Structures are given as C-alpha cells and as structure tokens.
Length: 118
Image (cartoon, helix red, strand yellow):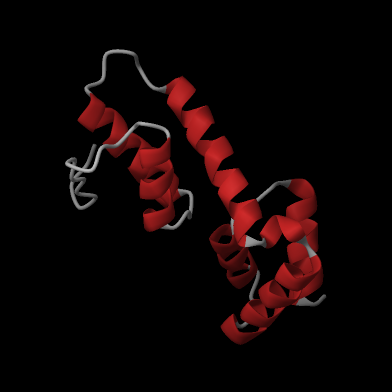
C-alpha cells in the first residue's frame, strides 16, 4: 500500500492534522520522504488539508476544549491550558496563539511558557 492510500484510509476514519497524519504514516513504516510526498499530493487534491481547512479544524478544536474547561480558571491558566492542548494535538503554536487572540482568550500583554506544566 502506498503512503497516499494509507493517508486516505486514516482520514476516512478521523479528521487529522497534517502532523497527526505524518506521525501515523511514519508509525506504519513509511519513509519520511514518502510521507512528505504523499501529504503534498493530498494537499493538492483535497481542500481539507489546505491551510484554510487546518484553520477550521483549529477553530473547532479550540471551541471544543473551551467548553470542557472548568469555570473557575484564571484567564492566564485558561489560555495556557488551551495553548498546550492544541499544540499537543499538532497545531502550529503561532496559529494557536493567533486563534486565542481572535477569540479573546489571550491579550497582547500575556506571555505563555509551554516549558512548564499548566
């Protein structure tokens, strides 16, 4: 089976970020170069792998996680938990920070340090 076919099968079961697909394919034994080629082919074929599609998945994941957070968190703790969760899910940290700012979860003065736990 090709890496492209394996990626399609993975996507058929669950929406995944590019990073999640890459890791899953490499765990299946595909070489990094083959994985990169397959993901670029898929990007060209499917809009859900485009940056716009990635942004929509990020927004969905952010909303889902926001709803699941406890009400008593400080704004800084809330932002840090959201950022850490989304980065662990494979989203680009800069894209996550921008999404948090758009949603009012992070102001420009707030600094987040991912090196320490939430």
